[in-house]
Image (cartoon, rainbow, N blue to C red; front, side, top):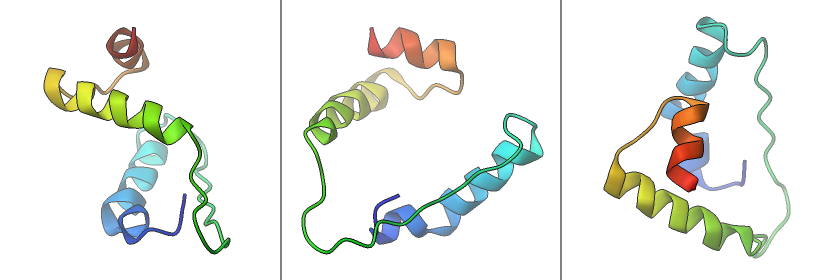
Length: 71
């Protein structure tokens, strides 16, 4: 997780807790980057495209749904 406030809000923490509650994972580890300055990589551009498609076509909650979305 980068150090942006959006990544440390209560919804992210609740989602991490939910993942363990429903048994999808046994444990969630969140790490915060401590570097100062611009730390983003080119992969951010790819995630932006995926996010825009996700918003247009509807959110998915399964790995198979996500796989179909990014193809």
